[in-house]
Image 1 (cartoon, rainbow, N blue to C red):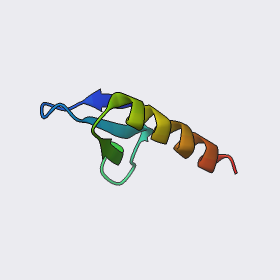
Image 2: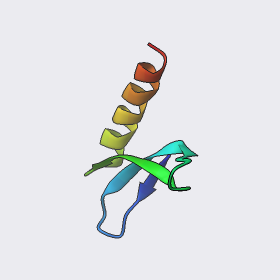
Image 3: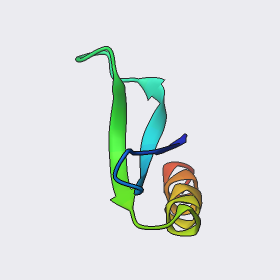
Image 4: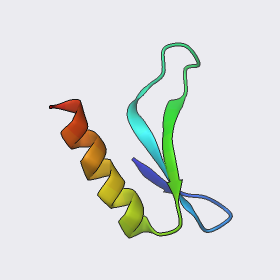
Length: 49
């Protein structure tokens, strides 16, 4: 899940909420949406291998 921050950067959040905090886990902040999407695919691949 990618959200645009007020600073113009994009942050990748986990899809599920973190049971400890009740919020979504921050999986990285990126300058461009394309970079965030690329990392999101890498995360999904890593989760299944």
